[in-house]
Every structure is written in structure tokens, then in C-alpha cells.
Image (spheres, rainbow, N blue to C red):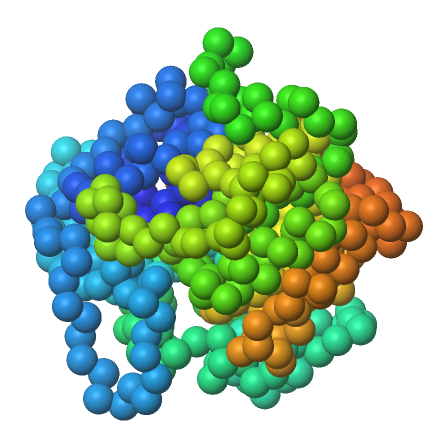
Length: 457
């Protein structure tokens, strides 16, 4: 497993590592020492006994090198994503050495790499008993729409939507630097043997079909094995203090607010968000953290300021979490009835899996497109701010309105019912005999060559 060193990417590939390991296969998780440490310290929703089965390997590289220069760049690479990008720069050679070592003592080496790590693993093509597969950490809708747009199409499928894909896209969702980094991955990706998607055909079938059609032309296979459900922790696990707080509230009465590890809000926006939550009179749990920057262990993080007296005024109604929050377990808690978030796919699938409707507030990259999937296609969320107004501060009055619409209105009730139906559907898909479980079984059979053995019987 070769993850891109950003938290949501690390999470998904670690969850997939545990799934593959459950089939009895040895799994090696390969990253810099600091990112392996980060991965193991944030194993929310995973069983430590499952993590213990994973072999973590520290590549001998500096974790934060300087990126290759891009003379054509005209806009600044987002500061919150810069460390993750920089951390990949020097990984190709040490990973190639590790791969060669593994190939000499193994019958076959299967490399599963993040979509953004194709450049690092490209030497797989020169190893006779190695093969590689891309693990896609984005929604199929986002990937398909990017492909469709690159070919001049305005809509990735024939399914009608109330809105078109956010325009313009490449210019506004990605910076020149990131586009340059993405271009480095293009040629190495041609050598992959197939694609794995952390989604379910029951919710993204048309978009997966579009992606599969391209794979078929290139003679690649594809598998949709999600949404990946984190394994339940042992019953004797220590309960997080914020889960204890949630225990005191009625079912579906609390909205969870979190912006992940790649988004930092301005002081002005934090103040408006705080006032909007307070005025909504809806109970809330707010995970208020700045985006990850470089070494997450060095303590050099900004502590966002809240309005004067805010935390005293909200006692009994809301709570602010400033340390690392156990998000999968929070979303699985029965008191959670909504999730205000920027629509990173990792958080979306956790929310979908638990039947939690979303207030979509996209910020960057694939998030605007995923927000369309959540609100217009699946109809399990509402929009906080239209993408065209992304440079504007969202005022408290608008946040108050969105929170109340999602949590305390007839519209919100309909969305909650739809979210529950979608959750039940994807959970069935992951049960034995379900479509996602069958695809996971198919992938394991493919890489172990079990399907070849069966075909010869």
C-alpha cells in the first residue's frame, strides 16, 4: 500500500489495508516515518487488533522536500496541501529499492497506490513479478466529470440534474501547481493493471460505468468495493469524552461540524459560523481545528479564536472540540442528525454509511463536484454556499438558516429519510453476497490468481 500523505488519503488506504489483510494476505504500508506515525496515531474507527496485522515500512526519505519548480505556475499552491505534495517528491527511488527487495523474496508483489502516487510507483513496470492498481480516494462522480470535461462534455452521464457541474472547474478547483503535479502522474498511470474505487455501484453506478468503459479500452479491470466501513472497536474500548456528551442528547438532535484536515477557516468566517450555530438553537458538536501543516506532531498549530464568551453561552447546547475527534464514531452515534462539512470524499462516505445527511460547504479540489453528487444526485444534503460565491464570507444568518433547514424542517426530514435509505442500501452491498462485497472478493481472487485456477477446472 502506497498512500498519498494527506490524512483523508491515509485513512482510506489504511481501512482498505485492513480489509485485504482480513483475507489472510500480508499487507505492507509504505510511507515516510512521520506519515506512518501519523497514520497509526489517528486510527479512528479501526480495531487496533486489525492494525497490528499491518506491516508498516518507513522509507528513508526526508518527509518535506522542496517541490519541483513549475515555471508556468500563476497561482499559489494551497498551503494546507503543500506538505503532502512535497512529501512525495523523493519517494520514487527508495520505494523502487523496497519493491525490488520484496520481489526477490515473494512470488508476486501487488502494489496498490493512491491515485496521486503513480509517479512514485512507476518502476513497478520494470519488475517481472509485480503489478500495480490505483486506489481512487475520490467519488466516481468527481473523477468521471473531470474526464468528461476534459473531453469537452458538460455532463458525465445521461442522468438529468438540476444543475450542471460547477464551472469553470480546472481553473477554480485546482491551482496551476497542483495541475502540474497531477500531470506528473499521467504517464506512470498508464502502467497500472486496474482501478479500485471506494464507492458502491448502487449509488454511483452510471459514473463507474463511464470510468469502466475507459478501463476496458485499456484492458484494465475495475472494482467498486465501498463504501469501506471501519471495523467496530472492541466493546471495552475507552469512550471519548465527546461521545459521552453525545449520550446525553436525543436521537438525531445534534449537528456535527467539521472541516477536515485540509481546510482552515479565517477568523472572520469562524466568528460568523459560531454565531450562526448559536442562533440556530440546534445542538451542535464542532470540531474546530486548523488544517494539517507539515509535521502534525510539532505542536506548531494555530488555535482559532471564538467570539468572546461564546463557549460559556453555549453550555448545554453545543460543544467545541479542539483536539483530534473520533469522527467515524461520532457519525455513528444515534444523536447525530446532520453533518456540516466541505465534502471531502472520505467524510462523505462515512456520513453516507451512517445515514447522516449533509450540509455541503465545498472549499477546493474535488469537493465542489462531490457536493453536486450529495445534493443533486443522491439528494442527501443541502448546499451551504453556492460555488460561485466561494470567495465570499458566509454570514451567520445564512448558516443559521441552513442548519435549521437540515435539522428542524420538513425538508430536512425528507433528506434524513433519503439518507437512511441510502445507508441501508450501501450496508446491504457490503454484506456477504452484496454487490460491493462480491467485487472485493473478485479483486482478491484476481490478485491471488484464484480466478485463473477456477477457470481451468
